[in-house]
Length: 166
Image (tube, rainbow, N blue to C red; front, side, top):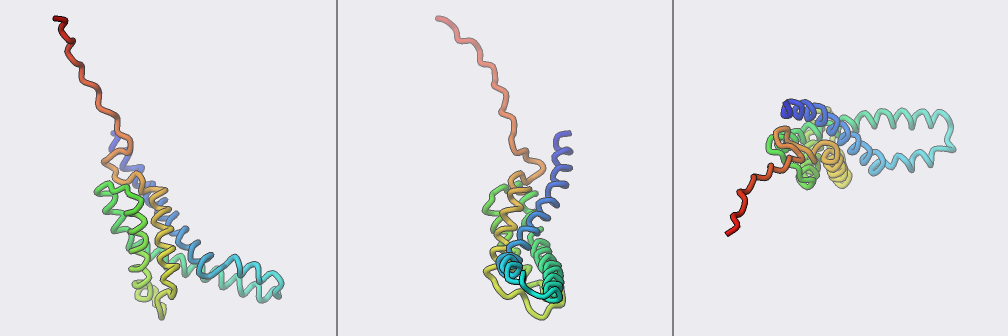
């Protein structure tokens, strides 16, 4: 019964971890590469039409970046499945899985989305992968493997025969 509950818990936790990793990757690209915070500070004195155009570009760009990071994490599912099957709980494995899948996903992105070029800056692609891998490990990777409990009970002590008084 315990293993069935653990399997159901993994089925719930893994998608939550993937969603959190996607959001972390999107945040890194939007706030790092695109500098959305600086854009908002500079655009406070603009005309309303310009502000509407900036917000429209922001929402459209957010959708595009979310699609990009989702493609990256589709590639990362191979590593996630490997970690679940073999109960790999190392943060280093999950961070490396995020970084590698970010580069592979960024190269696959033009073929899937029909865009003309791949995303330009490999630094932010790597940063998004590293952040996504770390966030995935924090949410779901630290307890990977439904068949191997995180904290196993210690074995019961075996009774020792009484020492003879000679």
